[in-house]
Amino acid sequence: MNASFDRGLTGDRFLHREVAETIPFSSKEIQEILRRFAVPLGFALANKFEYTIRTCEMAPTPSEKKLCATPLESMVEFVISTLGTKDLQTLTTATRKGAPTQLYTVQSWTVVPTPNWMATACHVQKYPCTVFNCHGIPQTKPYVLKMVGEDGTLVEAATLCHLDTSEWSLTFYALRLLKVRPGETTVCHLLPDGDIVWFPRSATKTADAAI
Image (cartoon, rainbow, N blue to C red; front, side):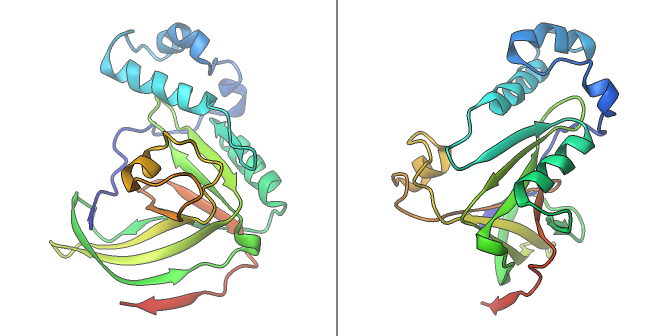
């Protein structure tokens, strides 16, 4: 498959909670936000930051829990609340030497069991500081895919399979790409560098499969 694991532009630091609480995070205050970060309105960068905010403001599905976290404490508190435990483990994509866009071959995969197939994923967003768009979705099955690129690049890719897509919007990109309706199929996707999957530490027994 053709894949890219580089997220590209992201913030390089979390804000302290005291600082984050003084900076607005709303599409209604985009001009003030851009002024705070010295980004001119109308620049491509400004449009990307505004898109991040509007994505964060989108309503969750009925069974989804969602939060865009700017301070690190908010992300951790949300994950603990969503999963109901402080005893947590994380899953991320790991590369041996970068991961350019190219064809990758899947060599094997590992299922990561979670209680009731519940996990919380936090996706890095394009923003001047570090912002994670976190959401907890039931019926989500994590995997680790061992992959090798055409140039020999080795990747252990964190992967999520959404087993129930019945609440998704008809306009959701993955459904349009697969030409299916909500609830008709499982949808799986790779996670780029920087994204984090959280799940209870008790769910550590894995099942491997080789291709």
